[in-house]
Length: 95
Length: 271
Image (cartoon, rainbow over all chains, first blue to last red; front, top):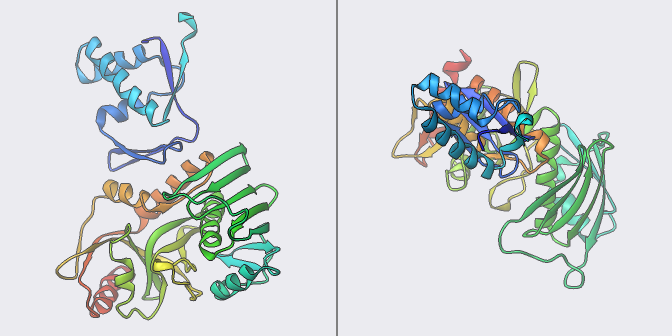
């Protein structure tokens, strides 16, 4: 799971406004407003960083444990995936 | 038969021979034109009863993207089915024999053509003030139709307004799409002078609005049923429009002095 590499789904749209990340799903047409940690994770969805790597950055930036960060990231990405905002690729080294 | 909305022309072939064609010509009379068409659509009208498309109770709109510029649209509540080839400027549409279906098709095709160009369709009232368009954005029941009935000399629409980017500014265009299925008959275009979130209230009042929450709300009022690839462009355009023109929340009570109140409110920005 932590080796999975998330990426933004095609057609996803986002814009930072007044420090708030607004994200639009092209799949569901739903509009989401992400909080600070949500925006932090969203900005790192580049199709190269694994969930583990993103969680490690989050843990360091927000001074939480690695396990806590990974749980938070996985749960958050799950909800984005349900909205059609995220797709997954498996990290090459983990195959 | 050609219809031009927001300077974008669509030609509908095959309608002239149909009874529906007469109704369409009457309903969109202010928007008929001889402009060169951006899209040429062949229209087939299904007769009532036999062969009519099935009708659903809930709005069901499906966009099937067969390629980047070619997709199929199916709407089941006001039934029509269409294929649209934006790249080659062609469309085929089958509609049930009533104006609701054709109007529904027209709204959706314009939401796509505007998004594919430099604009968008917005659930908003738009009135002219100080030679500019004031957009009063709101969902159903926000008061758009009520506000527009209070004596504004020029109303671009009380329901759906087309907005296009023009250089550094945005221009609002009147549309035939009005509330309660009234046919708009005003041909107007004005630079956008302000955007307000429309609210009903005990008195006329403008309150500041936070940009991010305003954009969130206004995005919910963008009328867009189109291919996924256009979603980022729609968000960018809406974001730029709101960032440049947001003035606040506009509370109003349904009295005629709202016209003077709004004129005075807009004048301070024009100055």
